[in-house]
Length: 188
Image (cartoon, rainbow, N blue to C red; front, top):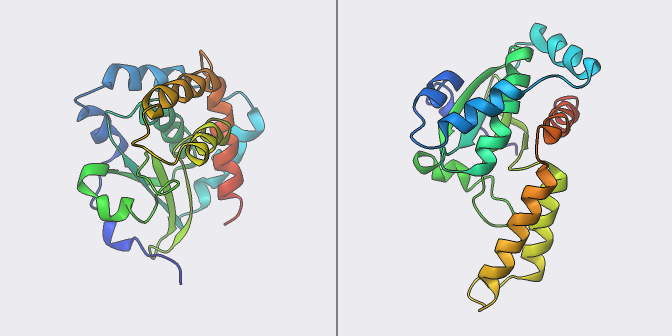
């Protein structure tokens, strides 16, 4: 049975409300938003073509303290704005029961972009990171399951540094995120 999130519709913040309400990382978030540009005209046209669809809703689980939210959600906002898809942001701390339905390798990680139909049935989700970045954390967690191990903290610091490098210095990951979103949406 498909999960239903209809009870969350109308409970979230608009993308603008989320940005205006940020108490941390607002300038960095806005900078990534402003830096976005379409690298592939075909991707832009695809998202523009979604404007005729009124059967998709998006809920984004997010927190302003999270670096992945700051890097990834501006790209998601831009793509969904172009597509004209109704989007709401749900703050992680206020929506932990929903977050627990979208764990990443057993843990809470944001952002999670949930696509649902107008009845609230979940069609799919994306996040918390582009696959090439997330794969580094997946490998780390498989190799280091014991969070209490004495070498856990230095090792996770190393993988976080590698993840930052995988994102790249600039907007390289933006086109990757757009393509991953396009691939997901194309399934429904």
